[in-house]
Image (cartoon, rainbow, N blue to C red; front, side, top):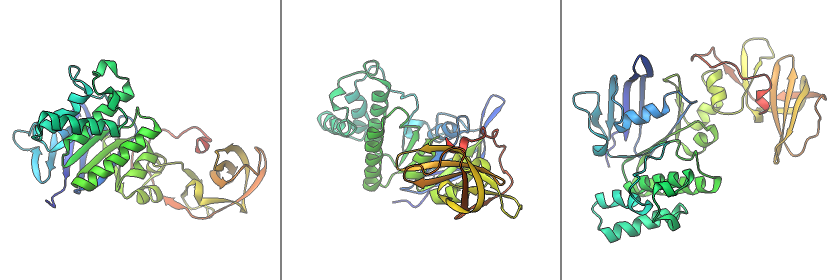
Length: 338
């Protein structure tokens, strides 16, 4: 197997008219690796995937797949000749094909006969819980069912690279888990890599080998899930990757990131319980005090009520640098408890 990156974009620039959607983005994805693109709407996630797939022509930079230059110098390689499969946000199913024929199509392109392709397609549809819908056309399927057909078609393709644009947005929790398990199986069996765009921090941190944070068309930070969660480069990155409290340091020098599990009830720091929310396995307390507001997460049922004076302590923290991105406006006060 080639050791060239499954996908490598270098100094990639994409524009829509006068608006720059991607700004000098460089990212390499190793064979077999899953990289999550995490960012808010409009950050450039879908644009990056579409440029990699060949549906958008970059204004600058290059795209390589498996070491092969496919965009950025001379005539770009068309999407169908790039060794990848893409699942779109808007499903992009062929209206004249049944679910079975849709999934069987890439299998037949691999050289399988009609009966063999139909049998494999039906098996993949069955894994995603929609074998009974094999004869239906897109107009006869719900949004979630169409999304599952699109996922099945991508899995049937068996490429070296998968590109997923918010693929689980319309799936319930059970089917989402089935799909992610199936993706893991495909990766182990074929060594395929995947780039997975999402706005869901929990999903990105849970499935990826590395997470790439995008903001305003720029690559803000790339690292392991632990790195981007524990050591974000600024406030925007901190809030993008999960619940985050930003408080003044006890010595008055700078600000600190405090994740919900990094603070404990009891200790020398004083505050007042502004919000108390029971979450089932744990209770969240938003404690307001001289250092600011901090979200403290404790296991079990509530032991304090709103308005109680509470002592708390820091178990760990991360010093936040000045913002390196043009951060969005601060969330409303108390959003740490949401």
